[in-house]
Length: 114
Image (cartoon, helix red, strand yellow):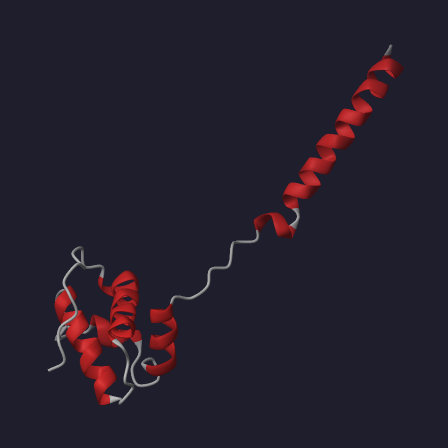
């Protein structure tokens, strides 16, 4: 009887071991790689060279809400003569909001050049 039990559990045990081996393989735990947003790419290419993210957390920061974030991104891209479009400015502001500021209302329109 014991031989019959071992023959019957043999394939089941092999399947179980195979499932455990597949689940434990490094590929099973690989996280999906997400493409960086346009805002993140613009920020890391043009902004991070002059200041670190610490500038966003200082006590006397000029950004206090979504609209002021848009104004500051527009200001600094003009200062650097980057000639970003309104969409680029909004994309960088959204990236900063998503990663640093976390303002709830981001529906305000982009401030006109000033």
